Amino acid sequence: MGAITKVAVGATSDELDRKRFRGTTKTKLAPEVIARQSRVALLAFQALPDRETARLFLNSEDEALGGRPIDVASASEAGAERVAAMLRARMAPAAKID
View 1 (cartoon, one colour):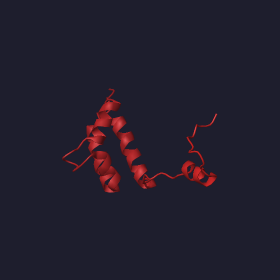
View 2 (cartoon, one colour):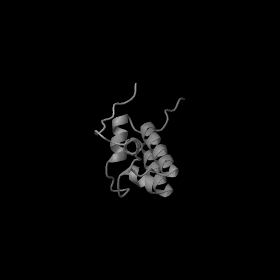
View 3 (cartoon, helix red, strand yellow):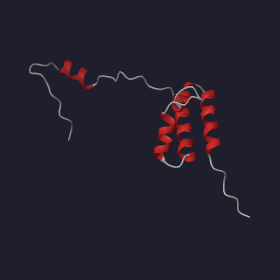
View 4 (tube, one colour):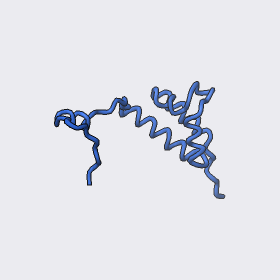
C-alpha cells in the first residue's frame, strides 16, 4: 500500500508531481570521503573495546588531531592516516602464545 499524500483541493497534477519528486537539499559526500570515513570507523570499532567507545572517539574533539577524528579523516587522506595511526597505537598487541 502506498503512502498517503495530503493534497490541496483544486491542486493540478503538475503541482502533485513537483511535491512528490522534490530532490533533497542535502549535499552528498564524495565517494572518497565516504571511503575514508568507513575505513576509519571500521578501524575504531576494531581497536576500541565497544561500539559506544568507538562512537565517542570518532565524534569527540581531539586536541592532538585538531578536531573530531571523523572530520579530520573526512578532510584528506593524510588526516585519515593520522586518525588510523592513533587508533593503531591504541590497539592491544595480540596475545603471545609460547
